[in-house]
Length: 144
Ligand code: 5GP
Ligand code: ZN
Image (tube, rainbow, N blue to C red):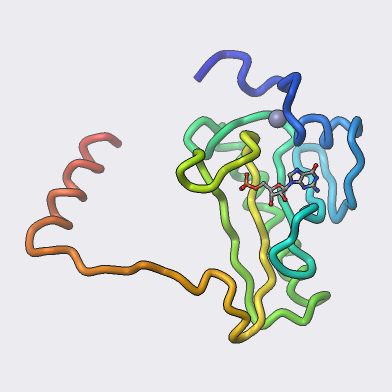
């Protein structure tokens, strides 16, 4: 990780929102965290939780920053779900372009869901062939 990656990035839209240079519809703010409505919602109340420090992905982030996000998740998810009358919600964090990350500043989507709303209808689950899961798990453990 570059040493300055946590500093505000000049061209980062979420750094500018966190610094108050670009407006947002704010839901919650504390020393470390800002939560605001997504400008292109998937459902009413779609909220983004953003650490104020700039990190790109989960793997680059200080554990303290992820803890600060985790600390506010219960109350923000509960409020979003209650206010929108959601039957459920997704907490989603896209990491990397291949995973759908367009804004390269760590953020967590809270997406209110209604039963049968059809959002994320396609979940391409499959079964591992014999022995493959064990091999993949071994490769992952070797990288820890
Ligand atoms: P990603 O695909 O990177 O996980 O999601 C980025 C999200 O940020 C998108 O859902 C997009 O609508 C939202 N977004 C991008 N620019 C802005 C902005 O300037 N203001 C707000 N409120 N949301 C934004
Ligand atoms: Zn940023």
